[in-house]
Figure 1 (tube, rainbow, N blue to C red):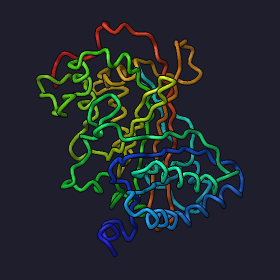
Figure 2 (cartoon, helix red, strand yellow):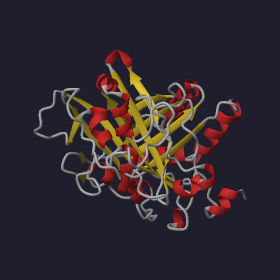
Figure 3 (cartoon, helix red, strand yellow):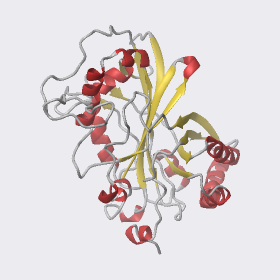
Figure 4 (spheres, one colour):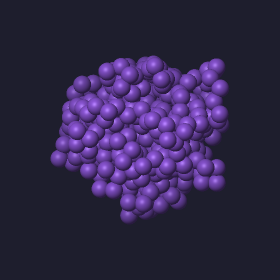
Length: 358
């Protein structure tokens, strides 16, 4: 028994604390309503560990990994005889004065990572073939490592991750708080499209106030310099409440699409939800994340909103739970979709940055 099995009741966690990697593919599936779907998905679960071992044996130096899990509705269909994890439930929308995080369904999430995209493609193809006829793709996004690990907006990403000496498993993996599902993780994903022309037109000093860190050396702004609604101020909810991020840039350059695929693993979804509430509602109310405004310069609304945007892009947020492979109970909570309406904004307009420090 290895150290992880000792910590998590004999279960081995999935690769939730790994670094972002050089390349990644994120796939969200919806499962069809049929008995065949249940059977084929369970067959994939039963062989999932072996498929990963095969890839690692074939390509030992490629840092290959994949995590998989199921949504709350899929869990009820696949494992009706079993209990659910404590925080596995349909996502409830988060509604603030300016932004709404709405909830829509989704069943299966795959997070595939490797040094070469060819390996990600190979594994995605294998899984897709096994799910043929019983699952439909909702979204597939290919991420890549940009420059020296920075986000596509030019800032270092993942700085707020737990340090190695803080034991990332403590923050990313379910433990004694839900012993029946020890070894699992809640994972939340977001897909954002950035208006890079607008972003790059901002002075570096303004960008730094939005993020809360220096752009070129990643040094955190002092309390005197940092606005109350800077991104890292709003999402910092305490040293004991952290998540493990593995964000990746993505792009369709000919379409002018540049974005960030956010993915964060946590031992409880309430931690991630608190971060979201701080971003979308604010704490205190109204102190919403400045990054929400600047990264898309947008209004968030449901698909049936009466708001008339100039153009509309999709963003995906998914709350997921990935549980121990050895138990073959790979779970992901409900997917959450957000519509972002991009509107024209004068670049010299006053930014929604609080002037008072924390």
